[in-house]
Amino acid sequence: MKKFILAASVLVAVYSCKKEAGKPTENTTEVSSEAPKSTHKIVTLNGGITEIVSALGQEKEIVGTDVTSTYPESLKATAKDLGHVRSMTIEPIMAVSPTLILASEKDINPELMGKIKSSGIKSEIFKQEFTVDGTKKLIADVAKAIGNTDYQKLNDKIDADLKQIQPIAKKPKVLFIYARGNMLMVSGKNTPMASLIGLAGGENAVNDFEDFKPLTPEAVVKANPDVLFFFTSGLQGAGGNEGALKMPGVSQTNAGKNKKIITMDGGLVSSFGPRLGEAAVGLNKLLIENTK
Amino acid sequence: MKTQSKLYFYLTISAILLVIIAVWSLNTGVYDFEGKSAFEVLGKVIKGDQDLSLSDQYVVWDVRAARIIMAILIGSMLAVSGTGLQGLFKNPLATGDLIGLTSGATLLAAIAIVLGGHFKQYLPEVIQFSLVGIAAFIGSFLSMLLVYRISTSGGKTNVVMMLLTGVAITAIGFSITGFLIYISKDDQLRDLTFWNLGSLAAATWTKNSILTVVLIISYIILLPKGKALNVMMLGEKDAQHLGINVERLKKQIIIITALMVGSCVAFSGTIGFVGLIVPYILRLLFKSNYAFILPLSAVCGSILLLTADTFSRSIVEPSELPIGILTALMGGPIFIAILIKFKKSL
Image (cartoon, rainbow over all chains, first blue to last red; front, side, top):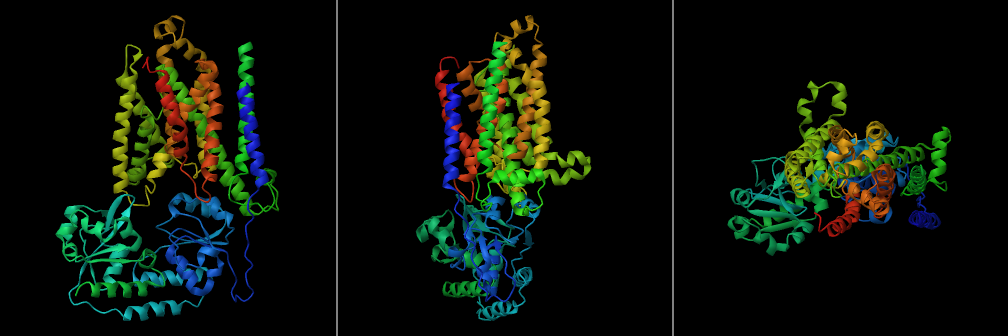
């Protein structure tokens, strides 16, 4: 009996504290009157989409993003980081009172998609194809969704960038490795990374499976890559160059023997947005340097 | 009669506490109703007020209220299933997750999700819609039968056998579920954490109505069985002499707990330890009087899970902790406490 009364009073106390503390009031940023188009409050749940909206000059309208939206960095100050799309729930999204939610089909889980659909907030879920044409189409689709017709310049920039790619006489075999939890995964064919490696004049080292699969020593030896390719953050996680060379099987490969390891920023190479050309040129340069 | 009124008194107190927690939970969250309390908004939703913004209405009704009700339903059923099993096995360690019911349910639910697409079209529509739920029930039911068959002989349950069977089922379930997750594309079984640590984030009113039906059917059969379980403590032979149909009682408990655990797993993944913590605390207060702890665990389970869920979604805003982490955090120490207390008798 006493225990119950005690527990109840503690709870009441906790509850009243909570009420007094109140919630931090949301800052609704005043939208400047210079903006020529109708303004939205956009939540973007994919790095590429975030980049597209920003590159179209509507960065100010983004009120919330997911964890993969690392570029442009100025967003950190203006948009709320809603965390990882996989574990996201609807309420934090609603809390930034968006008028438009943009996401890609492959990232978002069906439960959240259902909740977004039934929340009554306008949303666009895009199919993202990891090719040059797919990226251009995504740019056009996103532009349409936010009422922007001025997107051709982004596509022109991708084309202009891609023209700078130097062909490589002997295509280097590139193995892309990333850490998923504590498992090292390598990218097979038909993955975004394989597509980018192809654009940059290399060849994806693994061609006998699709998607990402855990790295096994035998598979590494069999693939015999000329270059190992990591996200900058991923290589640190794997223990730097030292650690990468010690990975099982690596020492038997050309990349291991010649210590050819390259890294690029994960956001740049995996978002397949307006900086696709830039990413391909960057990778192309690194491959040329490492195949001499 | 005196004990009866005592029971109602405790039930009332617990129910009031549950309502207080529900109000607190409704007011907890990152969404801001611009000066109104969530409670006011809920009042407007119920009254059908026209000048309510759609977003406010959605967050209060379809997000928070749905989730609170789901926590109440699932917490209640998990606690009662634990209490029922402990009465059946006459042992404080018997709970759905320890003897492998949850793993069995998870396993078949995972199979239904990953492979269901291949044979779905051959099933009647009603079953298609609730395929995962039915699969989870079958999984927990089969595990239950297996555990009971292996660990019970001559009406006596060998606890060590019971727990080891649970370990075996859990191991098999975990490996096959892991394999399914490995072969599935991301869009099917995205979240290993959902199955291993549970979540109430996907609560909807449809799911709640299914759970409510399961709860009502289960409680009509199970809750009046407190006295019979008390008599069972004397041993099955004595209970039989006193006019209890022991075999029938056992069958009922087996089917009902499997049904409850299965449905809970199907909708919220694996939320462990609720069936262990709640009966344990109640046993400290009321000894092993099942006439008391069976109905009380129904309310206290809700209190526990609703509190845990509200914390899980408010500690690390804007994301949330998987609720299984919190229940395991509470349950682990209690499990050890039980082991120490019953060291001699196990």
